[in-house]
Amino acid sequence: MTELASMLDYAFMQRAFVGGAAIAVMAGLLGVFVVQRGLAFLGDGLAHASFGGIALGALVAYASAAEGLLAQPLWIALPFTLAAALAIAWVRDRTRLSSDTAIGVFFAVSVALGVLFLSRIPPDRNVVDVWHLLFGSILAVGRDDLTIILVTASLVTALLLAGWSRLGYATFDAELAASDGVPVRTLDYALFALAAIAVVVSAQVVGIVLMAAYLVIPAAAARLAARSLRTMTIGAVAIGLSSTIVGLAASYLVDVPSGSAIILLQAAMFLVAVLQRRS
Amino acid sequence: MSAALEQASAAGAQPEPMRAASDSAALEVHDVTVRHGEVEILRDLSFRLPPRRLLAIIGPNGAGKSTLVRLLLGLIEPLRGEVKVFGRPAGSEPQRIGYVPQLKTFDRSFPATALELVVSGSRRTWPAWISRTERTAASEALERVGAERLTNRALARLSGGELQRAFLARALVRRPDLVILDEPATGVDFLAEHDLNRLLDGYRHDAAATVVMVTHDLAAARHHASDVLVLNRVAIGFGPPERAMTAACLERAYGHVGHDHSSVVP
Image (cartoon, rainbow over all chains, first blue to last red):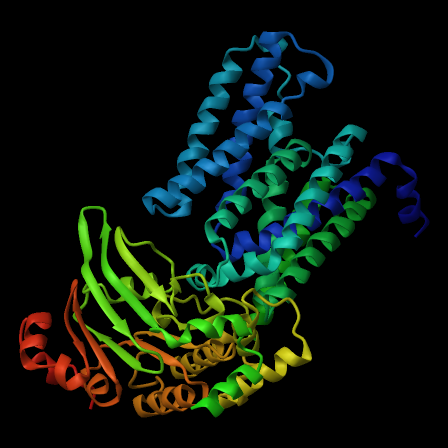
C-alpha cells in the first residue's frame, strides 16, 4: 500500500497518470462513434498517416536547420494527418468505397512517404525513432508533452460532448438525421478531423499501438455491455480510465511495460464483456 | 375538423405562424427533373396534393419512388423544377414532417431502446437523458401504435413488426402535419396491413394530417388512398384511385396489367 502511494511521489508517474487519463477520456468519447460507425481501422490508419507526417516534419526540420520548438515534427505531422483524414472522408464520400478501403489506401501511401522522407535524412542526423513512434512510452511523457496532450484532449473532449447528440443521431441513421436538419456531412468531416488531431498528438507520446487500442477496445467492450448510446459512452470512458490507472499501477509494482499492461487490461475487460453477453 | 386542428395546436405541435400556409397545397411538385450522373431518375414530374389527403405512390422498382421521398424531405435538390411542402421549399420545416424510413436500410445493432428511438423523433437529436415530459409523450405515441409494452426493450430485440410500430410512434410523436412512409412492409412478422391503415387513418383525422405512402401493395393503394401517383420516372397517372389506376396506366407503369393481381398480398 505504501509502495502504491509512493509511486505518486515521482513526477513522471504523475504525468503518466494525468496524460493517460486525458487520452482515455478523449479516445473513449471518440471511440464510441468510431466503433459504432464501423471505423475501427481509422485509428490505425491515421496513426500510420501521422508517421508520414512526422517523417516529413523531421525532413523539413533537417533541411531548414530549424531548432528547438520549431523543429518539433508535430507542426508538420498535425496538418499532414488532418489532410489525410479529410482526404479519406472525401474519397469515401465521392466514390462510395468502404471506409476501410479508403483508409487502407492512405495508410499505405503515408507509410511509403514516411520511409521516403526518412531516407532523405542522413542516418546520423535522423531524430525520428520509429520504435518509439510505434510503441511510445507513457512513462516518458515530458512536461511539454503533457501540456500538448491536455490542451488537445480538453478541446477534442469539449467538442465531442457539445456535438454528442447530433453525432449520435447521425450515427444512428444518417438519412433520418439529415431529414431533421442535422448537418450530417459536416459532422462526418468533423469526426475525422477530431480523430486525426487526437491520434497524431497522442501517438507521438504514447505510441501508435497504444493510441489505436485506446480508440477501439474500451468503446468495443462498452458496446457489448451497454443498452444505450449514453451508457456506452460512459462505459467507454470508464474502461479507458480504469485500465490506465490500474495498468500504470501494475507496471510500477511488477515491472511490466506500462503500455502493454494497459492494453491487456482493456482486452481483459473486452473479454468479460463478450462472455457476459453470451450468458 | 376545426376541433381537431385546435387539438393539434393545443398540443403545442405548431407555432402559430406556420399555420398560415396550410390552406395552400400540402405538396406542390412542379416540373421536377432529377438526374444521377447520366441517368434520369425523374422527368418533368408535376402534381399538387391538397392537405389532409392520403397519397399512395406506386410504381415498379427503380421508378424513382424513393427519390421522390428524398425530394419531399429536402435531402436532395432537383436538377430542374420546384418542390414545396406546405407552401415552403422542401426541407425547411422538418418538425412538421414525420418520416418512417425503409426498415431494411436500418442498423439494428445500434444500442438503443424503443423509448430512446421515439424521443429522438420529438427532440430531433439523439437523447442523452430523457425528461419526464418527453417520456410521457413517447409513451403516448407508443400506446397509439399499440406498442407501449416495448418502451424499454432494446431495438435489437424487436421483431420486424414491433420495430415498424416503434418507428411509426417515432414519426407521430412530434404531431406532424405530414407523415411520409417509404415502403412500410406488410405481411408476415410485420405490422398487418389493416392495422397500419387504421392507425394512419386515425392519426390523419385526429391531427388533420396529410399522409404520403410509397407502397408495392396495389390493393392497399386502391382501397385506402384518396389519391394515387402512378410513377415510372414520369407521372403516368395522378388522381383518385379509380382514375389514376386504370388498366392502361398500370400497363404503362409496370409493362403488363397482370402485375396488379400478382403483387397483392393475400
